[in-house]
Image 1 (spheres, rainbow, N blue to C red):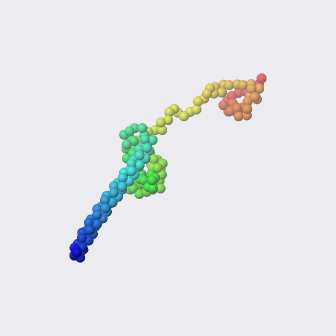
Image 2: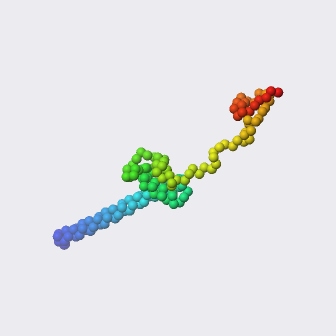
Image 3: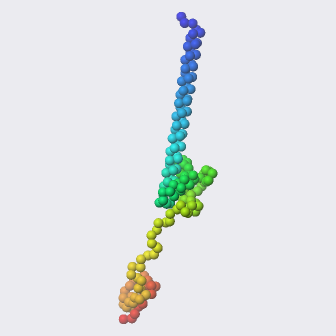
Length: 163
């Protein structure tokens, strides 16, 4: 029959190995938590960077300028509750919207922003109405026009002659 003190030693050995096993599991769990946190931070940085790139490329077509704008925008954006939010220069959340940030960037760094890419002067085509001042129509033709057309004809300098 085994002696009672040997049984106690066996129990102590089992208890010691259980403690080591628990420590190993805690250590493994802590390592996994850190890895998950790192992955979450990477995903956050990628989402913020993606938003900064998207905004920068709408402001300029020049790759070098877009890279600079991306840096400036990225410094002022953060991800909170799955949404991109604007921060101040010190990293504190603000009530500003992304549009407000874009306006500030346009004002602070106008040399990085492309023009509006508009073509032409914005004038409407005359469609042959440049000679309205020289146009004359008879009273009968004038009376057959609608009220709006008559007003426009007179406004543009057209003349009515009697038949």
